Length: 403
Ligand code: CA
Image (cartoon, rainbow, N blue to C red; front, side, top):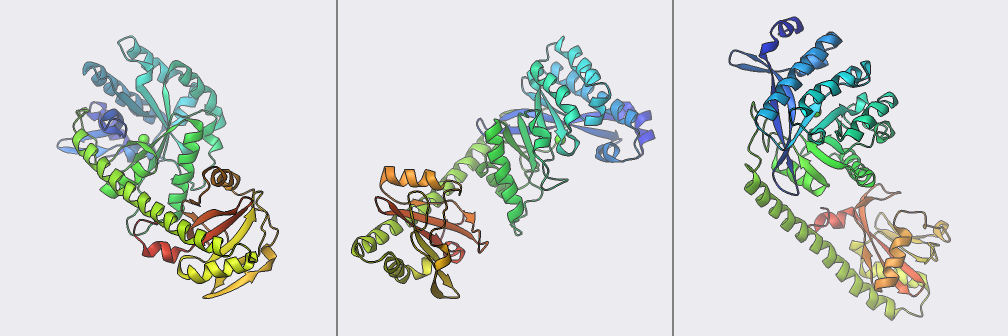
């Protein structure tokens, strides 16, 4: 099936619709329009036609237009109130500053379509400064913007590329997430994208959700929207919005239960440390600080690999007490170092002062060892704070601490 064959049978080019589900209502909030070519009983994807370098640009534009017109006809005819996610190539939009695409939409707004129902998907790799003006204008009309295929071409793609056009939705594929190869790099990228999305007021859409664990991952990582075979494949018609509501609600309840159990394990650990440490601290009140660290290390040998005390401004008042190859050693070079520049440091000091107790951190990678760890911190007295680093090996052995 080559490009010419498709161009001479445009009547066989049809839109398919893949539902997009929302986490807040557990129902379909929109459909991504995907091009298909029907040959007898066989349904071909048009992915190859669109991505093949040999396909002439005007062919692509023409087929894009055929698909969106057919989709909009069907969408209006069915009286849909959801959104329609439409893929568009930046090159095609830039050719006439987005006018022909808008002209098509305008025809349909006269028939009852609202601009707010259109989500324009542009691939991250396609973003460029020259697109900003077109996209900003679309946004003033109410058209929503989604950045598609984030991180797929270029793992550390420059987010400044699309930040200028204030996207409403960031689309991330879960294809890279394999069950057995827990790709930490990928997870870290997703984490930073979710922080970034929150800062710019965009929502995360996870696509290629193909198994339950991926849905759980998407839910846990701030995914507001989900799309993929696990929920629904692309179909020639618009799926019923409430069709998966019960199933999603039930899955979500299970994720919540699991997450709450994991959180309570983390807080149980914090309580255990808090009571154990405060006993040692009050016992060693008048002893030198280094002695306190030694006492703690003796009692918590398995749970800890690094200990130190800072003042409220983040200056270290002790050397680091560090377990290297099973042996505890003092590292005097850390005395007087300042850690106030570290994320959450001062905020945590203020929180400890306010609630008078200790805090347990999220999972993060230690700067020196590269291991995934947690840190417990608690006040030693009014102006001094103990930092207690918990090694991966310990977290790994306990249920729920690495989740
Ligand atoms: Ca897409």
